[in-house]
Length: 151
Image (cartoon, rainbow, N blue to C red):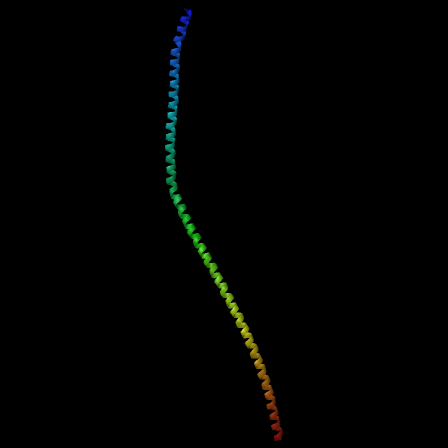
């Protein structure tokens, strides 16, 4: 009987202890769930605030981004214009050099022709002078002969 009483006594406190422990476990899960819910709620609030801050940054940065895009477009247009003008300067420089080379070549040809003409003219003048001297000497001889005959 003592064993039987002991078994009844032992078994009498196990049920309520288990019930109390289950209640405590359930309460612990409720506290954990409430903590998770509060943390999730706070995270959602933080995310909303972060979204508002990001939207404020977007609204503040939007004009700056448009200005940067406009500046980028203008700088690209300016770079293209400078590139085009540089190409035009290079083409003009090439044309000028080619024109100068052609004129120098023509000037050299004119100089050569002019030098030949001057040489020919000088030779013709020398021949004419010699011919004139020779003719003048004949003329002088004839004059002398005519003077001798008068005396």
